[in-house]
Image 1 (cartoon, rainbow, N blue to C red):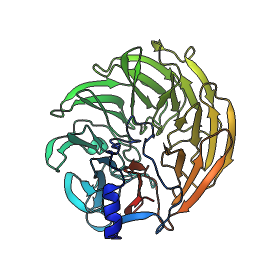
Image 2 (cartoon, rainbow, N blue to C red):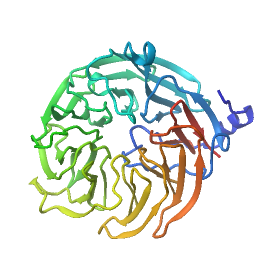
Image 3 (cartoon, one colour):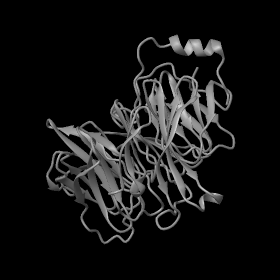
Length: 416
């Protein structure tokens, strides 16, 4: 393990006397890829601006979450030769200051057999954990959901959310009041479900409308928003995005489209919900969330098919919406109207969702290249950074003036 020096360790302890903003779920606080952290580096690499690097056991594309200088993430450790005996689905806690392991526990055993095949870009641990500040919640799709103490004690586990995954699992859970809510879109059935955070019992389960699309599967993470003083749970799926009452699961409104294998998480701003429609081919829709029933014809403010991602989520900075296609084309549009400002082909393949902090937008390619730009009406590239030979499909975490980047084998803390 690459360790920081004593001098740097002391600097880390005193560089930020004000407590840093915790990164508590997929895409950070609020779930939209923003952080208030400052003094982040634009330039970095395998040895440049690296505070530490540690190897992570097993395989996983879940993102780290960080609370009070503790990093939590999941991993799948193959059992036997190339996973012939299944997977040990594990939860890890690392120290954010030096990367040392505080604890490593098994949450579930996943036997080899039906439901274990995954896409070449997926893993058996691709769902990002979430914390409410007191407990940690982890989700391994149909293979199980669990609640742990912050010291690694398992409080409850459930395997009640049953469906047939296609290409594996991917969507992460969200917290709403006393509920843990997940989207479950398999090749056989698809629904949204809420578990009681206290005991893991099913509180409600709302089936999505039956659609003629034979490819029913999707991998999305819901987003919680507030409209006219009331919470809405926005969940995208195959051929539909819908808003639900978080407490009951009752549908409020829906918009239909043609699309499956939906991955990007919705975002919200300027009174609009922005969603991507998945494969076949993807479109980006801006929807006014103040309707009821089927609002496909009445509440879609604008839409575009150009440069829309299948996998990375979009990001909103000011009046501009930025998104990168899986094939490496960044697009900037007016978030209120959809008018295009610019497009730029940067190359590479992309799965990780971009993040914004300290006046910079970070895009991470699957091939290990990080592209850093300055938001604005013209494309302005600040840096390109490379992790040679490292696959990078997980999205960033940001905490304590540092970027945390998970590669195929390791976790990095990147810091000036």
